[in-house]
Length: 349
Image (cartoon, rainbow, N blue to C red):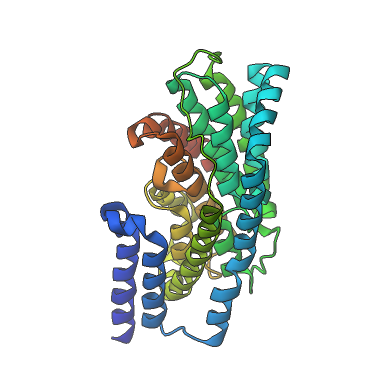
């Protein structure tokens, strides 16, 4: 009977976490606080509170928070130089090379400079260009796809990778800093290259034709950089608590789901933040193929719609891209990439 009540209680928390941010605007606007409360409730229902969990929740978010703060400060003070550099490069190389470089370089660097800063740089690049709206939206969406994929290669890149490493660092996986790079790198790096080529094809030769997207000219306030770091810290802490609380559900149910089913089921990350789903699904009881399938499904589908990951939310918000505009390009791209990767994920050893 106790296990039944445990399953029911955690199941209700799971549903609340998955559905509330999508349906309730106040929850969406205060997501970090909401997830923290849900994490405390989940850990309490599962009776997993101990000093190890408290220490992990306080310590694990520090690395990515520091990375976000440092990268944010650098970006804050070098924003003008970045714009000047972008303009200089645009005059020195062809538009095809420029588009390819932006998508590939930001995708590969996002695991070091963080997905948040990579997205902010993408916004600056787009603002410095003079594209019509439709090809520019395509450029932004494909750039965010690449950033979302690349950021997963290290625990500094985004909350998804931070949570995955934290939950898999013990036996039997013993995940270290480069665990995800070793597990997913052979799939992610070629995918970023392919997205760069797709951007060249889909953007088309429309440079200097006007009517494009423009980010606000006023520089980001220093206080915003600090607040963003604090939100990242609270977000990761909340997801760690959720992950520990959901561990009984993972052990009971997710370990029995085939890798192929996990891959396609995680198409849900198109509408639900993929870091939240990572906290709910990934655990040491999953085997390597299940982990690989679940994470790749989350990473790819996360680019399909604006709520899927952090780069989408930042870029769409600053460039005023609507949900329908994003979906027109994001959904078909995600569908194609999911289909192409499916046999690769299952059979590449």
